[in-house]
Amino acid sequence: MAEQGDREAFSQLFAHFAPRVKSYLIRTGSADALAEELAQEALVTVWRKAALFDPAQAAVSTWVFTIARHLRVDAGRRHRLDGAGDECFDADHLAA
Image 1 (tube, rainbow, N blue to C red):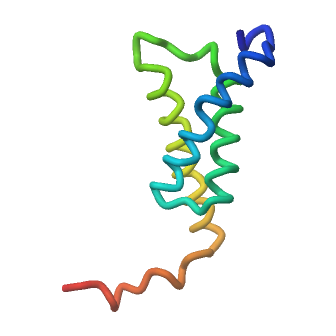
Image 2 (cartoon, one colour; image 1 turned 120 degrees about the horizontal axis):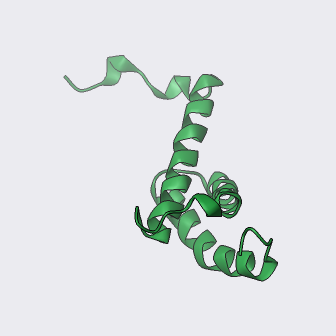
């Protein structure tokens, strides 16, 4: 399907997984706007890399959510590298 650029198949894939992935990302601490962006990026990545999916390795949902999780981790790293959020961590306020 992805190899042929089947827009209807992508639409169905997106309609099924995008709300679930966005909800997962929000539950794991992403802001709503970031979760929306990452969910879209995850589904585009899934579509582009569909030929790499191996059903012997994992279920489709596991693969989709793994891609989303990796994108969330990468976004968090970029956020920290940009210097954002530095003020949030103060070692002096950690419990002994």
